Length: 83
Image (tube, rainbow, N blue to C red; front, side, top):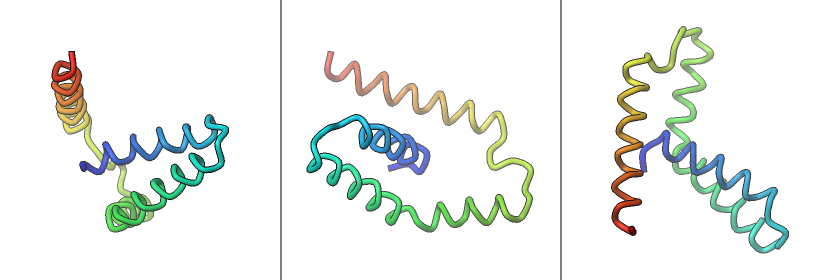
């Protein structure tokens, strides 16, 4: 799973954590979030080190546009697969 997609998934699970009423589902979402953060620990630490070092940008605009287009294409493929 791509790092930025994982960030999106973690945010979605975090939002879902507060929306569900079942304690079992909350526990499941929390376990999934912690597992994903543990798996991508090195990427998170790299990002924190870049922020601490004072780098002006983590990602330039063209890279962001390319990533966004790639993500949208993956979503289109996924949706068209089930429609």
